[in-house]
Image (cartoon, rainbow, N blue to C red):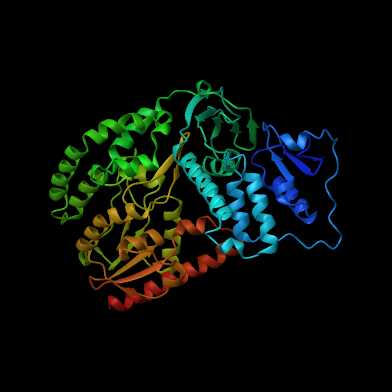
Length: 492
């Protein structure tokens, strides 16, 4: 069968679709029908597995061509709002969705602004279908759980080949529409997503489609799930527990596929007890900030206030002289977070970004040994991919949580000038997100009387090449030169 088959039977046209989620095929045929002046009531849309139209098939006529549109037929009108809604609504399981969308497209030709009428029954129904599909997409993104099912003999480099499988039961025809999302998010994994409607298989280079599967085709669990459950229990916040809202966002039907779901009843039952313990602990923990760098160092190694601290990593304290007697230049340099090498070494800026920073500081005439160097976030945030730990940017809440420790360092070191490298560092010092391009090149006053200068993070330069890197490196050098000149004035 071709992508679409058309049978003109009596006064009705039967349109058979090869796929239930192929918007482009539906749009192509709908355009031909509109230009051929075929009204909605004369069309029967049939998707795979559908029974067709009883009255259309009763005539017994053979296959015929669709009406040919006149040469002077006007182009079909379809504004952006219609196309956006239709793409989602077509993925719904409602068998009437094709007819509904064609009827609305037909009406759109005579009334171009009909999409603005939110009270129109057809528009309300399309919006309902599109909303249900978006909700199903969200559930798939949130509740797919991959499990390790095999380890091969190894690839060309001798590394073990791992394959992850997930089971999901979508309510609508969303599997293929979400292939790109999972391919981008798990690009370095070999994975399969199995559903009752079909399957997707990614080998790291090519996406393949497969037949429908059964729940028993997917594994029930793997050794990593104990670690995941430990993490979930650690980040569960009883003070923010709202059972009704949680069930709305994570319906019970998905629990059977989620390893952490087994903990939920117990965590809910103990929420009040844990909340009281958190209040008591928090009252003591935040009563006084440590007054020495050594005390801050000890505290950040024990800190578990955000999910990053629960990972397999080590806190990295700032380093450098603290006052003029130790050669302190009055400069504090703040980066984003430790990287893989910094986490292993226990020192800030020792990896590729740190080495690049050293070269640019030397070019600007700034002695790194005379500056106090630290990070906005004290633990390395990463995602494990085989033997590698891939850097992930800290979130706003994680930056804001770690701001407590950075302010403690500033209170002890008391720099005259603070250089924030990157948006994360700038947020940690200002309490809000700013644009690097707009904020760089000029001082900002901080509450303690010091000056804040903002520039890009050296890791940003490492991700560029060619003319782009040359341009950004020149801007970085200009920022450091301005910092050097201002330091000279402040310390004169």
